[in-house]
Image (cartoon, rainbow, N blue to C red):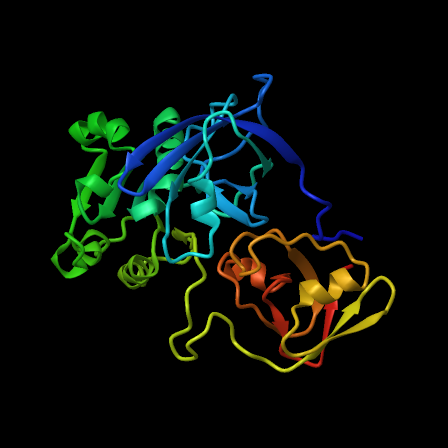
Amino acid sequence: MTSLIKPAATTLELVVRRVTLEAKGINSYELVDPERRELPAFTAGAHIDIHLPNGLVRQYSLSNSPLERHRYVIGVLRDPNGAGGSAAVHRLHAGDIVRVSSPRNNFELDAAARRSILLAGGIGVTPMKSMMHHLEQAQAEYELHYFCRGPEFAAFSDEFQARIGRGCVHLHFDGGDPAKGFSIASLLQEAPEGCHVYYCGPAGFMEACRCAAAHWSEGTVHFEHFKAPVDSALGSDLVVTDGFVAKINSTGEELVVPEGESLADVLQNAGYPVETSCQSGLCGTCKVRYLAGEVNHQDYILDDSEKGSCLTACVSRGKSGVLVLDL
């Protein structure tokens, strides 16, 4: 029997080698092994979990080239309205030791793409920058469009300058008014065969990209949220559903998941080691395979091909009376 419940992820003790002011409110952090050993490999679009001194765990995309096995580089925007994660990262200094997970990727590049269009909104540029490095090294055709309020908010701009001159990278500034910015709909009006689109950024930007790419063929549009979107119809992040029963296929044990309690919490309390991280359906840490039942998924990472067999235990709930899990 195969299960998608994972053992506890490998954690690494890394040192902050360098902190760099990249743009207004944005720092980059270069993390290395204290003994300068190679780090676990990663692919473009991957992220790591950072365990912060205040007890929070946050996910940040890797922005550097996957060929660089000696370091991880993340970019972090300090959010004054956040829950304290970005503020805690911004209190890190060179020489500090941090505990991070091995990289994992829910935002992979499609190797079959003939051409890639990368759309970055604000701090959503971090995974796109890593994709840019990979595509260049693979001598693949790409263009990166970076949208932000103004030049002072454009992170990693020094690395982009030469690429702007070559026509590979385009910066778009709107002064804080998206209506005055570059039209994403015009950019994506045509959907050439073999071309794939990738986008990441804040909620309004994500919605604009979704609408602009709605006519593209299935499987050619890829995206990653860094914050769970709010369901405007409900005014909350999650859809409320009634309780349901989770049945463990290997033993027949039935666990009641009451309204207001997550499947992940119920499984953990019953002795099933479900690892969790984001608790909002964004990171895929708690992905589990199911065998029967109807699922209200509520996540932001599973594509249609996965939703028929997998769920994220932190936010997914059963629509039917019994949900059979492959555990």
